[in-house]
Length: 345
Ligand code: DP6
Image 1 (cartoon, helix red, strand yellow):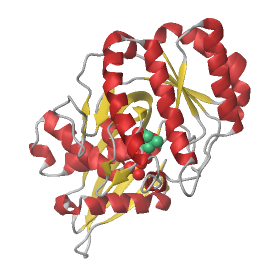
Image 2: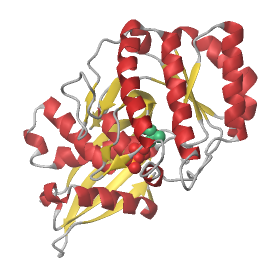
Image 3: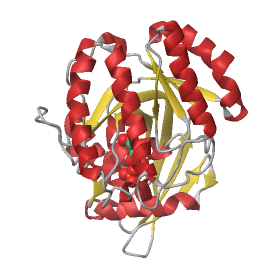
């Protein structure tokens, strides 16, 4: 095989209904739905290099042109899970070059964008992938991305990505995500997500360990049932464009995620004092202005500020006047709902 390469840009996403809890092989304990982001993405180039004498394959990973051996174990685990489909790589050495649009260790989950970009590169190079129709290709890429990182499965589609078997949505599956095909009010099409960086650096608990906390968790079954109910409610909220109900559901999902972590064994408290300060300020702002400004959280201390494009100026004024002092180096990232992955030439 001659030198062959494939490059993709793939976005991160922010879950509205959260995936928290999984079982082998990387299947979700409940369905989840996320906004695909626009400005927070990973670009990855996979290049197949020389033939090697071993029967297996070998690879190197680079982040911003520097070798990143710390990424290798998670990628190795991913490649192992799809090994039977990677015969075309056997007996070759390849390189993976990645670049994130967001600052290193900014607390944005790079696994969703990174694993979806890698899955796209691998599938583009695979003889099987080349035979698929466009929709089959993205579905398969989503399935592979899921095996790299669950939330990555949702990054393959623009707008809203839905992962996990959901009542009333026949095409939904635990194996891969699908583009959300229900009615969506235009207000959500360019919804804003301003990511408030309370903390930078490594997560206190890895997401895989975090999901493990749901095994035997005393409230797990009720939480999974609640996620199903929230998926049903969110569908009608999205169709109606009911911002107030949207905010209530999304904030409750975020706080429930953290409540699950706080009530597991071992227990974790991933919010920081400034996370709580920011939440209080958001609620004050809403009480005083009646503007639709809401938050969600990932498994960390940073806050995602969600709001319609129509109040962008007020929201950014609020961030600069009231919130900036709570942020690490005053930093935040302006993002919004985006169109999904792009193949790079
Ligand atoms: C809190 O997808 O990072 O962001 O499947 O172990 O890689 P793994 O976990 P990951 O978990 C994300 C959890 C979350 C909620 C969500 O994105 O749905």
